[in-house]
Image (cartoon, rainbow, N blue to C red; front, side, top):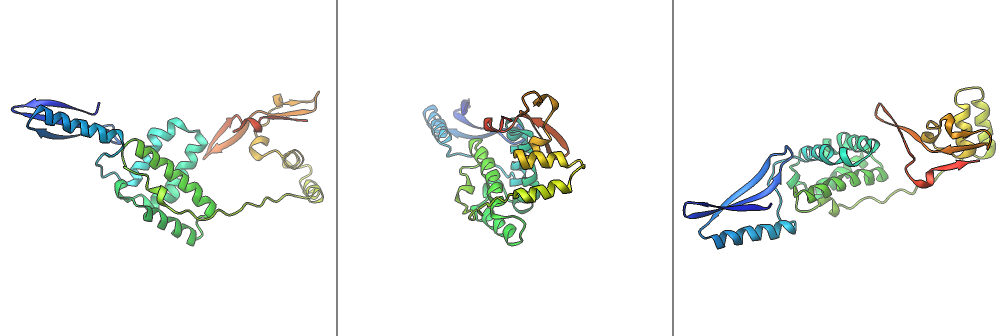
Length: 248
């Protein structure tokens, strides 16, 4: 429902429905017309613009309030716990302190750009981490665009720093043997062996259970991983089908 027309005396009252605000309260605007035809024209124009995302709710909501609304109304119901924890950490640690007080509808690309410059100049974030933070902001503003809190996603106009190329490092066989000798007969010996010789990740090692070890076939099945979101321990299936495997 985009609105309605009612008769008030000799006038026609037009109600425009903008949906609800962050607290669930309906947002409506009103105007009047001298004839039903004029009222219908106003309502049709409103519907046309709304369908093409040309209208947004008028709100004084801050960017901080909007991000919390996004977390509580979208992220909580559509993302895994580890993702929710990651978004919260990014938002409260770096985004809100620098951008939270801006009104959502007055937030500009330059504000976001300047926050990234400050965070990198002070060595608080690397270029690669800035990309992760920007993905969070972009996803939040995409939600805001769909919900008509904003008329455009200002993060699309931000220029991101060049990513740093990741160069992986690995132990030689001699280095691995030295490490295994150092951790021999300690609780780290088995995890280091599994990581060094079978290439298991940390979450795969701590996710192993006896039921996934077949002594007859001398195989290990990677079927679960164990990770954490803050202080909460989470056991789940590996992220991709390729990560589910049997090692012999």
